Image 1 (cartoon, helix red, strand yellow):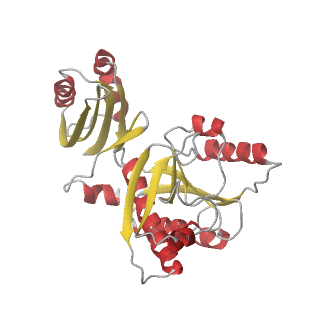
Image 2 (cartoon, one colour):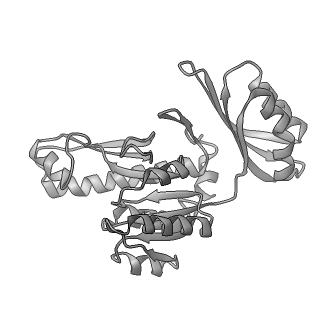
Image 3 (tube, one colour):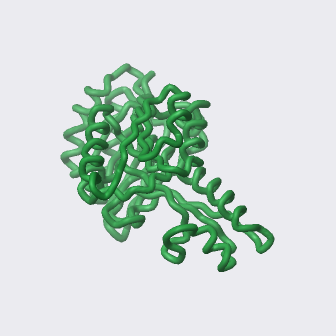
Length: 294
């Protein structure tokens, strides 16, 4: 039996859940997991429904048949094959902790994605990437060639069919045009000291100020630098006994975990954009294992 995922966002009104349930029942489908949320502030409704087709109805047939329901309620709706791995392009500069963590999770099956390539403006991790049998692309970025470099990146996105770009500590700012073109499809990770400790060595700055919490934020990239809709965050408590190097080490661990969780939520279509915020449905206890292994 095929597993599918339906995602819906629309204006909140009566009858949406019933219409979805009735449609799936009529198609011989059985709901195995469902999450929903009514935002009383914006008046929007969000739902994610995971279901199986007990009568072998195809994905195109399900998508076509759902159109009348979608049109009736003015839905932004999509039905996806729950077993189809999302094509992801990773980008990195010279800090490799997030990249190495993602490659390991991918290798053991804990992060079920199809890594179509790794892009870097340096060669530091070329050997690591190639040893994983993943294409490595060096795109040098300077002030003079930035438009050409970004055009090269966009060509690569098109050629590989990339559905999600992950900035795994990629230290170049993307243009407004690319942020708009890839809206909701680029995830970035950074420490959560902003805006207090900007620029170089933020962990050293935090150490010198006696910070007691180290955090990380994963968010969608927008034209506003480091201010896109937040997907995932976490913190780690530290004490006066720890050194500046400890701050860096702990911070890297938090960044890696937060980025992996954000990607996991996105690839399983549990994240919904809601203006400047996100709705993130948790993986249910019954569905996490199947999500984890794809």
